[in-house]
Length: 384
Image (cartoon, rainbow, N blue to C red; front, side):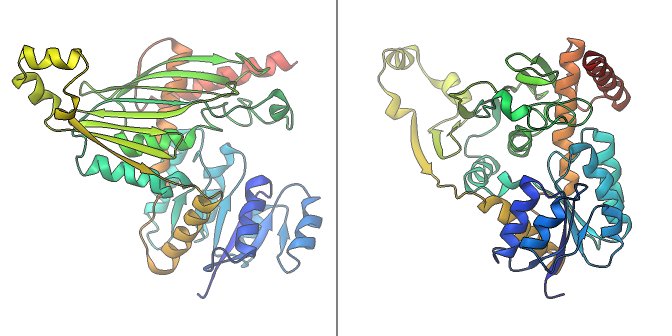
């Protein structure tokens, strides 16, 4: 095929953005095959801006139209795997928006279907994996620059959202329709990056506030302790009520530390010998000099890397990579099967909060489903 015909399912903020990128020729290997939205009024917008593009109100009709080779799912989270499954069953490539779903077991099912159809491309929209800064962080870790990871700390509170944001739509920030709050809406990219860079924790213990600073039933403030099972630990903090937020990631290893500030600057600190070796070999006299504020130049050196971020570039990169995989098997930056890791982690964070206990990752699917159903019932009773 000359170009991959992409069907855009959901023509809201994200879907219309992707359509604009393609229409502007920013992804040469893609063209808009069709657009689908359950809101019939969107048809007028599509006809005005994309006069030769078919519009559908039912995504099944789009999948069976013959107008598309692939789909991207810019719809509520519960629908991602449903649509992905219907597409793959019809031999149509699928790119799921993040998170892949609310239920890890549904991500597992669609991933197994995709693996049974190796001729199809199954991806997930983790655009931050294309960010050169985080690719550099991953290279530094994977090449052993900081040695074995001992601790991770990420505070990402730059998601400020006023009440007016939540009041835009009745489905937003609800258990029944969105499946949660900041963990499933704003923070999935960081949750994916954390496990992509540092690996999955073995267990979590969470303190979550629900409707803490906003009129919501879902999470707007999260603090989670991660246990990697080998002695390494971590902390992940996020919220939507810090108008002056912080984005700071620290990854400490036995040979050094990576500090990422504002997703723009990396400070790499390399120890000249590992902390384990320092502990074994350093005399008390040498250590005393450090306590007095001198001698650091003999212990470590630092290197700084700075990056500029162009808005939309990372989304374009994911779409380019998805099309390239379809056309010539270019390796996917974010295979759809990777989506289960972030969902497993979020499921565990929620379940820990609801039970008040440390929970293993992944959680029992039935335990999570029952606990989430209880949250939905409570939410619905409060709305009556």
